[in-house]
Amino acid sequence: MLPAGQLALNIPDTTKPRVVVVGGGFAAVNLIKNLPGGQFQVVLLSKINYHGFWPLLYQVATAGLESESVGEPLRQLFDDHADFHFRCVCATGLDPAARVVHTPIGDLPFDYLVLATGTKSNYFDNQEIAQNSFGLKDIGEAVRLRHQLLHSFEQASLARDPAERQRLLNFVIAGAGPTGVELAASLAEMRRHVLPQDYPDLDLGQLHIYLVEGEDRVLPPMSAYASRHAQQYLEKLGVIVKLKQLVESYDGQKVKLKDGEEIPARTLVWAAGVTGATLPGLPADRLEHGRYLVNAFNMVQGYQHVFALGDVALMKTKDYPKGHPQVAPPAMQQGTNLGQNLARQVRGEVWQPFAYLDKGTLAIAGKGRAVADLPGGLHLSGLPAWLTWLLVHIYYLSGFRNKLVVLANWSYRLFTDQRGTRVIVQNPTGPDGRPAPELDCGPAAS
Ligand SMILES: Cc1cc2nc3c(=O)[nH]c(=O)nc-3n(C[C@H](O)[C@H](O)[C@H](O)COP(=O)(O)OP(=O)(O)OC[C@H]3O[C@@H](n4cnc5c(N)ncnc54)[C@H](O)[C@@H]3O)c2cc1C
Image 1: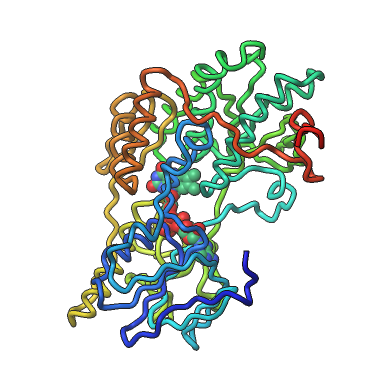
Image 2 (image 1 turned 180 degrees about the vertical axis):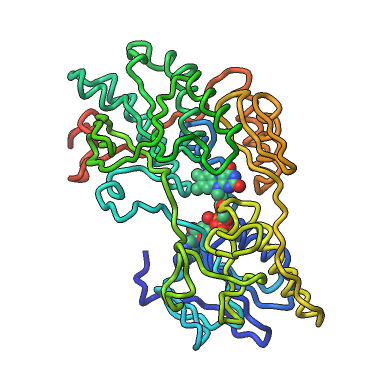
């Protein structure tokens, strides 16, 4: 790897207005797709080189999908967009007065800056939980969690001490939003269909999946109908749902809940909260709840050339006084609207304010089981909701090849109940950097 001093952004000079977009997620992708080609120089800065389809991450983590099938390289996505430049770098701050965005390898001047950096996990200042728990925010984290799950099963089958075996077979998920619910259900299905063949010697009755939620129901952002059905599905799958409970601490060995209960566990998945992935550089009063306050055109208040989109933007409207939900549809629609407004500007037309079209919310809780809150107060559950979930996710998944791979995996799973990606490609290491004891072949074998 080259040192930072030997790297530069290398963006060609231009006479066109330069639009710098930070983040390659749902908002950024839809923005760039709608910018008129050739009218702007578009520079996309992203710390990862792909557009990630986060709603399917839990399937990567539970060995249902190949990791690459939920990401599409950003260069490939825009290879036919004129005057488009991708740089795989992290933006570290901005200076709105000087109109530059900072990166570790240099500053980049902009005419328009679009912040579409999404969210990061919120550990509520608990460093211990941050260090010891597993997140599910990008493909790297999903693969790390998959390794942890698979390696826990392997170690449980080797453990001498029953208490240690139990610690390895207790899985705690903090947060029963869609991510927590979907992950818990998928792991429970693995216990039912995949693990009995793989680990005939393990007592899978000892494998416990705990789902811990602070509110009084699962899926708090969805309707009471959806929560009720999802909880029934989870309980049928044997997930232990703990409501009105908070994870207070976790040292890598035991999860301590607020009411004093302790669950010995080697795996805690943190799906209990997010906060905006904001950059330093704007006054503190332009932020609320870790999101940039924006007007109806996604302009950060007080800055005509700085925009924020998607999860990191907080647009208060009559219908959404606390901002839009932090899900993909508002991010996609805001990206589209800003792209179209910049195109309108080129044509000398008036900008249109953003208006959110709510197409509903879905969550899946195992094969044939899902819940859906649709516009007009319509609710679905069971097979109709599950089929809707499948169609919606395959439709919005980016990339034709990805759609094929995901469809192939889903078909395989539908007919066999098996999971195809149970390969541990990165062996776990201890704090000393050495492999786990059972995998340490010693110098003679290396
Ligand atoms: C596990 C999971 C499951 C989800 N399931 C659903 C679902 O079922 N349905 C649904 O509608 N929504 C779901 N969501 C939420 C949805 O994915 C988000 O609302 C959506 O991705 C927001 O889009 P965005 O463009 O604002 O941010 P993102 O899509 O998160 O994109 C932000 C991008 O910015 C990059 N970035 C961040 N900081 C920097 C920086 N400083 N410099 C450079 N790049 C940076 C990140 O790497 C990321 O690629 C889920 C999210 C997660 C994590």
